[in-house]
Length: 160
Image (cartoon, rainbow, N blue to C red):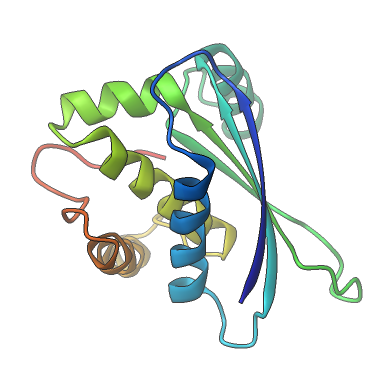
């Protein structure tokens, strides 16, 4: 599959993953979770600080706090055969804080957030328990294939 990923960093938080890592994680999620007929995808990833994350989370999810990852699937008419999948907005300070609180490596948690967000762009969700089970199983499969520990543990889970 051909994947075009546009990365925009609007955060002072360090360290951040490399563009190559963001692309690798995104491609792994799209390959595992996307439909077999999907041959091309375009995704934008914007890395932000807490103020921007909180503003977007309040506007689009009515939750007035920063969050780890927001997914904005492209809402294109079917007759427009464009490969645009959507946008991810990832809050670097929240990801760093969660990794520390959950005793996970920062790299593994970043990988999880990118995979999680990409699966949302593909239509997966975790609103119902049954949907959450499907999504979490796929996330675990992808993350472990990337050679990171399984993301869901008793220490805490993702809340996006």
